Image (tube, rainbow, N blue to C red; front, side, top):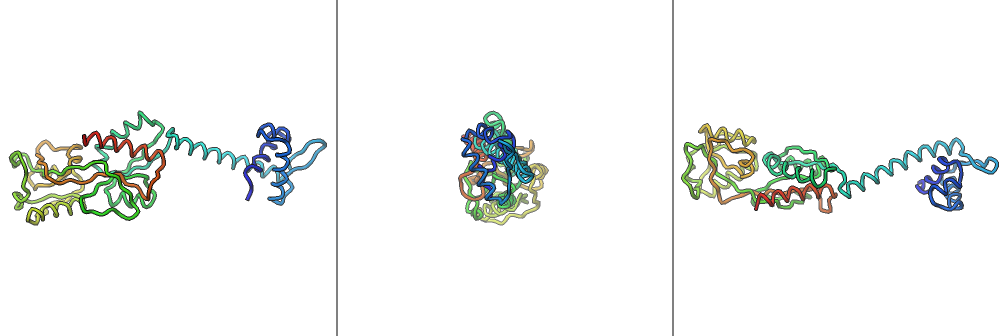
Length: 295
């Protein structure tokens, strides 16, 4: 393997045309440059330099290696600069997956915070429900995921999650048939048709209804919380939705009533910390927005 210091000495001789010039450019003594060149010839098994009068010149092999060396050293310098920029938060690219209502509520304010604090960080956003987000994390296609989980739902293996906030659940009914103010009993709607969302939300709905002593009749299912509310507003059923979904959009013809249940909103990464500085900056911004919302 070629030693980078020796390659650097050859490139400096190529640029300056002499050992003394290379020594001055690299701030080495001339004997050090000569030593690196001799060792480089020994390592490569090639004659890289020829003496011409009182000076030297590169052989064709030396010229080729010096040109490649310039490319290699240039790429190395670029990589070091990119790493330094990311570490100092001057720049960086973070790929974030977020479930739809989180992407519509927490993420925009987090992006605004980042724009003011770390304008060099670029955030690539993709909408994904938690199961898909976990797969994207495992595949290395995203760096960070905003996910949610209901009580008693285990975390996938190798995924590390940090809570952001508890997102309260609400019974959502048509305004015309809204319950009276105060605590809501789900069993009062045991005879109603129900509308549910994603598979995780459906399991939680079934669990809540089971705790209330009945099995709901599922009339419709949709991952789109806007469509779900439109179905409710049209009198086609009732549903349970989290607070973030209703903060992102609440249909004018539905009413929400708080339940004594919640889902956990969290930031998930694959593997254990530490994380790159840019990822930490994005996670910190989302956590700060979540804290303000929680407050």
